Length: 320
Image 1 (cartoon, rainbow, N blue to C red):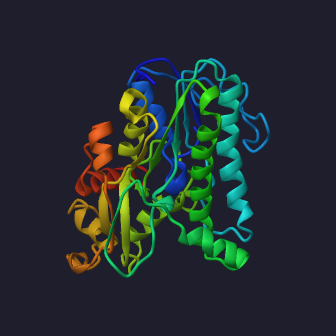
Image 2 (cartoon, rainbow, N blue to C red; image 1 turned 60 degrees about the vertical axis):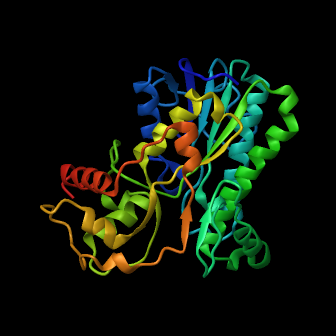
């Protein structure tokens, strides 16, 4: 499909920070508007009471040139795995089915998946790319059901939803006029641009960052991350860059320990310092290859210092 440089874009989940890991739908909307797109979802309102209902997005997809699907459940307290699996899969397939039937102007659909669909747990160093799939979590959920770990349940929802998207395009490729791009971010961190009632209402990843900065003893461990602003830009570039069509793209800045974030925070900030430098000896067994995002989307990622400064400024502006 040709690049999409203007027109109207439907953003599902446009009232969220960014759903997996803290989905930046607000940031996606802002980035699209700044690039000259019009947006249906936040500024032209399309009310969708229940995205799991058949045909829920039939009307919303009419007259749009592209779709950014960011809506997906993101929490770690599901008892029955179906609490996560069903809305993730049905929401994704549902919006694609609506696009197939009624999205006559749609040229590209961008789906936010997660590095949860890429990662594997191992005691050996790994450098994973877009060809990698997480087969461990679905196996755990299949074997243990409700007794599976919270992480396995969440991971499986992302894996099965993404696979369902690729399967849908493979099945209906001859009858649709659009192509698919899937973005796979790890933990999404960074400043917020929407109203948050209190710290207690922060989404999962934002709450993890806040705890690391404010709670003694919470700075242990680490993971992989990307800045919410970079992920939002990747959503826009996925429309603008013709070669992105049909691609699965990891959008990741790098690895971290929580102590790294304390070290990167502005020296004058009033947040905890932890044990400066303690993260330097941490061995990161898992890293992601972000080369495709650089080649295809032209990504230049925020540094940890840039992100930490923006997060601290956001917290201080909110009086936290």
